[in-house]
Image (cartoon, rainbow, N blue to C red; front, side, top):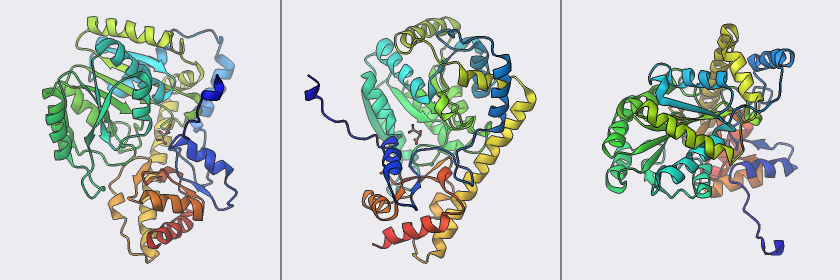
Length: 396
Ligand code: LMR
């Protein structure tokens, strides 16, 4: 029977890391998956996380199962961090999930089982795993335009036109709260208002992917788009992740947060979300959630964490600027200044799939096929080598 199984294509992001690890080029560089690296090329464990783990070793008293929705202290911190006092607490259900991907899958299963027929609208482009998750859940999806014809700026009019003319009331819409993946191009505050008005008018249910809080303009600043939406609608689902801003990638720690119009509707939806989790992975793992709760329970550790997020954010901004400046010195002539307003870990370089392939084959430099570069993986030390290679593929 298994002889009939065909081979799946490699994952368009994580598959590149597999290929990178197998590459024998001594100068190879992995700028594909969205993982932060420090100046020495390592993905560090944050100091606040190390301290929290030390405390957990001493104080943790059980490895017994968590509830289906996770660690209560963790859930409460997620609620405060993401929503502050913007939404009444009794309208929000927070379920701890295995990373942002786990949250998106639970949310997708919820949409399919509770709100069908429903279709979800995604930006074109979006993170490659979004359509994969929706497909796996059996959630029909379609796309709205996001980029202008120059592929370097956000075309809000095109997006609104698509929402106005293509969506049906009751459809869901996927939005990236900040640090749009893969483009790094976010709406301005005024554009968020336009989007929020359209979402409300078209009666769309927002599914908001909030995986990069703190990497755009700051932990609080990055809630602007989300809050603008929440001012306009009374129902939404928000999927969050601590992979990036706590550096807890492999601990798989995120949350699915559902906002309902009132406490009664929240409770009913919460019970359905729990039923979905139970038949999927039963209940979430403890360690990552316990780390986050330990840090956010302690004012000093929380300050330390905010400082560490800010350091990562500023380093990424510096690297993006360095890249643009160093590209100028190659004399190749292609101006990358359009990258400067981009936010978050990624930059959408405009390199074609062929140029991306040449970067890999000739220079051992791995970026995602869409031309997305993980700026957070660049280093000062290898900046010249990277820019020389980009200049070479632009010329060939
Ligand atoms: C990315 O886009 O590189 C990250 O979100 C990691 C992943 O799982 O793809």
